[in-house]
Length: 129
Image (tube, rainbow, N blue to C red):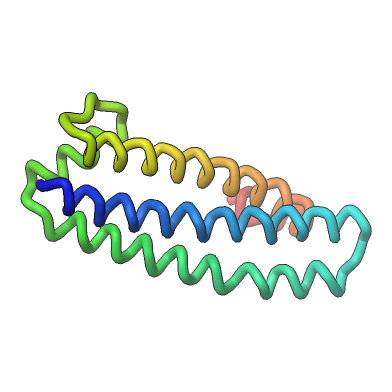
């Protein structure tokens, strides 16, 4: 794949990252509203999270579709880069860096969401299944 192809994948990773930042911010506000026992704000923040979560899913679907349309060797290279393989050029290096940032932020957001969800739902939490 050429540098433009890697840049396209990088842009999709950056979009995912930006939506994750938004989700993280709203989730942090949700946790704070729960600390204050502010149910009205909590309900509002839960509703506010829906749009960036939906948009993140759309971008993720676009990225998966784009990857699925690549030749098998490019798909394998993208997967290898995500696993820490040595990039061959600047396009791959930039993609790898952004994909790593996105993955790390996703892990943080999932952990934050897990804590909030367990606090709100207790034994009925999605994370207890």
